[in-house]
Amino acid sequence: MTGRAPVPVVTLDGPSGSGKGTVGQVLAQRLGWHFLDSGALYRSLGVAAVKAGADFSDRPAIVKLALGMDVRFVPRGVADTIGVRLNGEDIGEAMRTEEGGRHASLVAAIPEVRQALLQKQHSFRQPPGLVADGRDMGSTVFPDAILKIYLTASPEVRAARRYKQLIEKGFDANLRQLLDEIRERDARDAGREVSPLKPAEDACILDTSQLDISGVVERVYGLLQERQRPG
Ligand code: DC
Image (tube, rainbow, N blue to C red):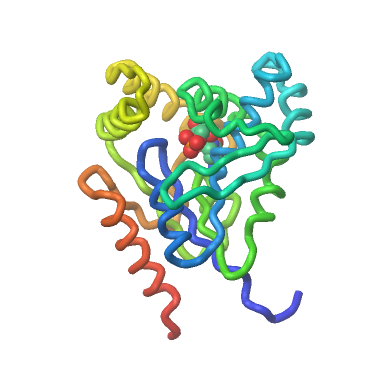
């Protein structure tokens, strides 16, 4: 090791619908830092499993797919979802569906999968800095992050946000069903053995139920400036 300071990382963890994806992208853009959407890796693996006709309960097959898949992120505009290529194919739309989220949550519960995707996640840590969004960014993947944020919001608020997103995109949506799916996914993500969804011990917890995106970005940006102030 040289004496050089490590590349700074801000971690944004929390359940789906807490706003962390959009907040993360806007913050990364503002800072001129890289952005990691770690959920997109798990979602890509879910798509890879469907394409391969793999059974989600066949853990060795899923792990093999995780080790072999070539996932690349293609940045788009600010606050837009990032484009994703799986083995050269654009899967950006396919993986953002509710089913894509459920499949991601299933593969994410396999410890060997989490291990297999660790190095890929670390490779995003490039100068001048990284904003990393997920469930275990602060607790497991980047434990030495300069600032760890845990964003949360009530399941009702998160379901309503998702409902609005889907309707705006012209999809059919059922609020009650979305709320049930969110609760089910939260329970699985929080209940799994490895890297369960929970705030890192040293995380700042922000409830976004009453805040809009720019309000959250301001709060996080302010906290980062405090952390980076010398002395
Ligand atoms: O953030 P997202 O909704 O795109 O994540 C999809 C699923 O992937 C989510 O249900 C849990 C899982 N996930 C995870 O276990 N660890 C991460 N760091 C990111 C996502």
